[in-house]
Length: 534
Image 1 (spheres, rainbow, N blue to C red):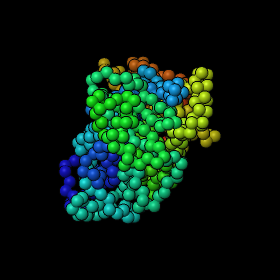
Image 2: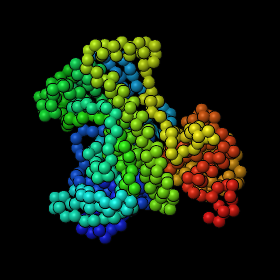
Image 3: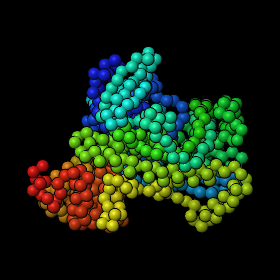
Image 4: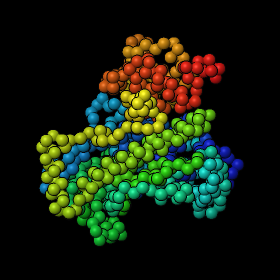
C-alpha cells in the first residue's frame, strides 16, 4: 500500500487495526493482507526491537511463513535447531529432546533457529508490498473505546498529534505490558513461575573453540544456564540470576565475561547484545471482548525452555486471521468465538508443560537437585529419557473441528495436516502452494459421488485426489502414512492447515461436511433444494 499520512488517517477506512508490529503483529498483517483484508498496523517504536528475544520456531510457524510467501527470503535468517540435552553438574546426560528426521511431515524441519530482528525485517518488507496493508511506526495507541465498534485514538511520536479512527476489529499484539489488554481490564491467570535470567548473544570468531555441538540445558544448582547454537557464528547463553543479584549488576561486560569464562574469553568472540528478563507463566483470563482480540505475549507468556513463546503467538495469528477474513466476507460471527475456545486451553497446556521443564532446570537446592539427577538418570537407563519434542504438545481439542456422535474429536481433528511434496508440471512443490487459501478436501482410495462433490463445492471446499494419473502424486508418502495411522482415506483441512477431521469413507465424509455446513450456516445436504437456491 502507498504511504499513508498520519494526519489523514481519520479519512481512511480499515477493517482491522493491529497494535504492535513484533513478529506476531506483522505476521497477522501479512496473513490478513493476503486474504484481501484492509489492515493498519501500528507500533510505538520507530524501528524493530534489537535486543535478544525469541530464537526458536517450529515447522508450523515456518509453514505460516511459507503461506505468506517469505520462506525463500528467510534462508539466511534461519538455521538448524540442534537436539537439546539436559546435563547434570557432573556432565551426566539427564534427558535429550530430538526432532523427527526427514521426510518432514509438515514440509519443514520440526524445529529451526532464527535471528529475530532479521526475520521481522523480512516480514515488514513483505507486508508493505500488499495493496491492503498500511504500516505506521512511531505511532502509539492512546485510547480505545467501545469494544463492540472499536474507536481508537492514535498518537504520533514525538509530536503528540492525535487522530481518531473507527474500525471493525482490533487485535492487540502489543506484548506483555499490553495497553490493549489493560484498557479492556483483562487480568492474567498466573501459573506461578517467575525467574530472572540474563540472555547473551555472542558472535564467535574463526578460532576453534571447545563449544558444544548441540543445545544444552546445564542443570547446575550453582547456576542453571543454557547454551544454544544459532545460525552462522551466533551462539546464545542464558544464565539464571541468583537470589540477591540485580539486573543492573549482572548485565555489565565484566560480569558477562565472567559468566562466559568456562567457554570463551575476550578476543575469541564478540558480545553482540545482552538483556535481562523475567520469565513468566501467564495466560490471559479472556482473549476477546467484543471485536477486540489479544494475541501473542499480550495474552500469554511462556518460559523459554521449549522455545514456545513466539511459536504460540504466530499460531494465534494463523488461527485468527482466516476467521476474521471469513466473517468480513459475510460469514457467521460465531466463528470468532472459536479463537479463544481453541487457543486458550492449548496454550495453557503448553505453558504448563514448559513450566514443568523449567522447574527441573532451575533447581538450585543441592539436595533436591541430586534427587532430580538420580531420577532422571534412571529414566535414561530405562530408555525413557529421549523424547521427541513435538510429541509433548496436544492438538486443538475444542472449537471449529469435527466431532463424533459421542462428542469426542474425530480422528486427526485439531492436528496440523501433513504437507507432502507433490509433483506439479514436472516439479516438486509443497502441498500448501497448490491448495489455495480456503478449505480443502484431500482424498486417497475413496470414491466420491457427484452429490458429495457438489456439496463440497457449495461449501467452497476444494477437492484434491491423491490417486493415479488424475490426481496429485506425493513424493514422500507423509500424507498416505498419516491417513493410514488414523484409519482414514480423506481429510478435510481448514484454511490454517489444521485438520477439521479425517474420515474413512463417504458416509463419514458427509457427516463431517454437514458439521462444516452448520458452522458456516450453509444449507446442508439434507436440504438440497434450499442449498441450490443459495
